[in-house]
Image 1: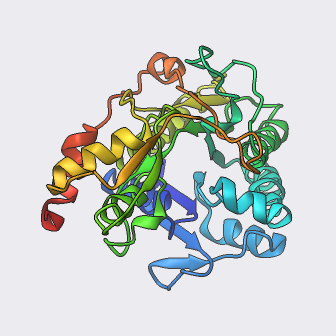
Image 2: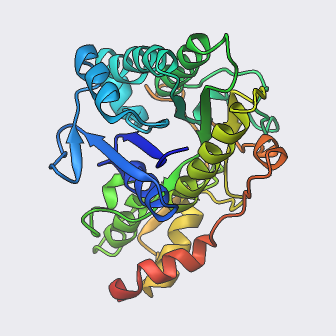
Amino acid sequence: MSEKKVLITGGTGFLGRAVMQAFSRAGWHVVGTGFSRAEPPKYRKLDLLDKEAVESCLNEVRPQVVVHCAADRSPDSVSRNPDAARALNVTSTAHLSTLTFSLEILLLYISTDDVFPGSPGAAPYSASSSTSPPNLYGQTKLDGERAVLAATSEHSGWGVALRVPVLYGHSEPRENWGESAVNTLVSAVWKAQEEGAKVAMDDWAVRYPTCTEDVGRVCEKISTVYLERLGKGEKLPAILQFSSEDRYTKYEICQVLAEILGLPLDGMVANKEGNDPKSEVQRPYDTHLSTKELMELGIQVGTCDFVGWWRRELKAFRH
């Protein structure tokens, strides 16, 4: 095979940047796309809602693999802008799936653990477990999965959904903690230092924060394994799952971050009440993902140490 080439949608985004780095380190020729934040030549500007532009891009770049990271991945944002979210998370994914399959390009679609209800006692979930998203965000990502699988149903494996949990990793710029639902807790810890602060923080739902660097590595390994084995005519799983085994509530994450920063947490109040039934966006209690399918493919599922990673990241911000 000639030089391996990958196109990464959402390359300017929080996960996309890490995925680009992982492929680059593994020797791939990497083309990353973005829209509002795309600055050539590092990134190629691409409107995923423009069908002709997407088709032109694929024909010009001719990648062996497309990793589809671009999405509205905020449950609150999806709830506020459902039409726009569905256009990006579902409609553009369906079109991209059809195009990649017609051009014999492997498509790796990044999905979420929010496709599962997360009811107490139900986890861990296997790739074949029954889905029932607790919110509109999870539903749009599940519909995206279905679009990928429908477009590639004749040849299983050429369209793959990779479900991942809540992510953390390097922000750009570094202090842009809002890029991640985990990273933003650094800001919450600092907010709790204000006089009279009583920052309410969820201490009910269980999360498995996973580093974007690990997700990037796994995306590259999946791509390499699938290209090799699909080339031999093998049928491969269409749904994969990846997650760390680090188990925390958001309040427990704040405790870790406060300890690293050398800050007290007296201004934060643990909320153990769970979902507000009147809330527009319902969150799952526990959507722990089984990584069995990845292990059966021979792909390493180990992850970096959560506390160790944050000790390195926050070293310069210690109080």
